[in-house]
Amino acid sequence: MPLILGMMFVLGINKFFDLKIKDLLKSKDLTTIMNDSLSDIKDKGSIANNYFLEREDALILGSSELGHSTKQHPTYYFNTNRSEHGVATIGRAYTQSLQDATILGSLNPEIKDKKVALLISMQWFMDKEGVTEGHYQFRFSPSQFYNFLDNPKISKESKNKLIDRSKELLKNSAEYKPEYVYAKLYNSNDFISKTEKFLLKPYLELRKYFVRLKEKGLLYKELVSLSDAKKHTPKGTIDWEKEETKAIEDAKKRVGKNDLNIDKGYYKKHFKGGLDKVKGKYKDVNLMDSKELKDYEFGLQVCKELGIKPVIVMLPSMDKYYNITGISREERHELYNKIISLSKSYGFEVMDLRDKETEKYYLRDVMHLGTKGWVDVSEKLYKEFDK
Image (cartoon, rainbow, N blue to C red; front, side):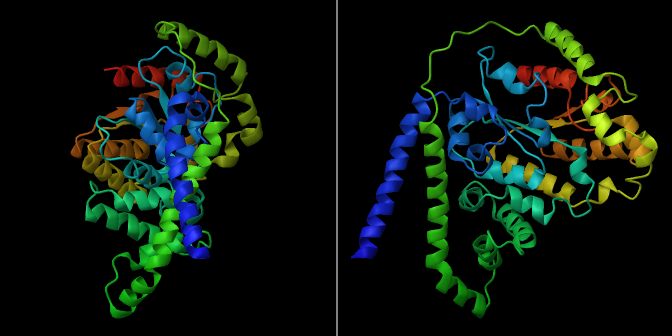
């Protein structure tokens, strides 16, 4: 009897969340969630992301550059009633291609014409092993993991690739031990593995159910705290020339005087003694020998299977800094060429920003977009999404 009552309670809670979340998504002002690139609601969930795409908003997936470090952030342009489509930003430090692919693969495959932008950073390719165990686990979402594997539009080949990488990257995780076991047994067909699968199936199915229930609970808690939606009046179009002029003015205040033309706080923290101390720091890095390239292609394969045509943005890096530290312009551009070649082989185009590596105020430090850079990228995305 206690077991039956417990099951009835859990099923009732799940139904309650489904009904309430559906209503709250329509009645609440979701701007706060859309603007927060660090929100676990988007970062580790699928429900809100599906809702944004259903109403024809766009998803911008990236990493630490999506932190609100300048006024010129995509949300400032898209979520202020000056665009036909809003954007939900998803990205925090140590996010890489594998996480992006899992997020996209966790989405409802029935949503047509998904608007997605992928911001790709050269820094992801600097580690030979690609994303590290710690960084993968920090960003890992069991709910997205199971949704990906249950997605009928994703091929067995792609599911196996996620399984193989997850077995590598979750093997030392205590928190995600069930997902490691799930991955380990996923393609195993020997007698011992079959026995383990049979014995563990009830537990793993419950685990899958409860991680999805947890996502709903967290989303419900977030939604009830939001203000009710109000009818917004369009504020007209964006004067991009005016925005660029303002961006340059803002950058001058942020930069001060330094030989890299980057934020003075960052320069003081990292280069107080000059650039000589970082000379040759990355001389042994081989961008073309990283597992990240395979993970990136995996992401492209997932996009193609799901019918997603992403806007791919290859972000620039500070030319002077990386030349000094040992990753030459030729090496960086070889990577950019590879990214473009891979993308075109899947039918996708890349927004190639390599010519911005030396442009003043385009970057706020050695790798993140600055005031001028965000205006430029936002304008390009604005034109793509509003086609």
